[in-house]
View (tube, rainbow, N blue to C red):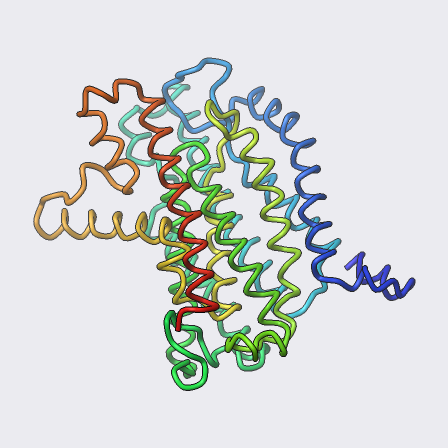
Length: 378
């Protein structure tokens, strides 16, 4: 809004550039996060705000949640740099409300821990409620907010349900047009799955951060090109007017996450928490819907999807057969437990680093594959 105001007053063309506003958003969010994280971490340590019942590093235990600071920085930066339209408003609504749900979850964890320390509850009670609010309540809130935003987007964003990109197919004859009764459940499902997927992935230091950034890079490139009629026509992809207004939000997320990774790199000083993971996951989900690339989530968002699926399969298998498919879910914990059985991997830090870096490499490779498929392979 501020950059748009300055453009109206000065008519400097650079201020009207989406690439410029995105660059400004990325830099501002990164610098702001780098300055704000140290005092924020210091404050949380003073208040002993973390969900770990058993201390492992004493005063150096990672605190939580970073997501509350994410919310402040990303919303502030977006308000400065973004030009508000239906896309931007919808994305911010999802981000704010999903972050609030995650923050409430984080607060419940911290409160439960405090009750155990005071002797008001047992360790077993804490372990039973270690995930904060119940999964069913979380899912109900995700669905309620997602349906509301989906209906509003369907009403106010022209042709949002038309010509959805499908990998390996051409826009000329194969891109489907979804009716209301399919589009609303699809959009709701995508947002809820991504919110849960990112939350499940956020188990090791930096594990969720890099795949979120690779998704943002993909979404930013698609949003920028899809908003230009000549480029979209030449590349045979749907033309989506004004979707590039989402770029400053994407830039804000990337800048904030880069600063977060600075402090989250092992051994971490702060962790994302549900307020960060759920909010960013839901936002990534709605951005995939807006750029009409939801069917590219199995490629670019593979890490989040496979983590989500591993949890669903584990729960379904245990409830129906009494047996577990994985040693532990989500999937990164399965690899963790499997590597512990190998005498070669005799260090927990080494195990986590191996898994994390391999997931990062996969997410970067799949970003490249996703871009190749989106633009060329049809």
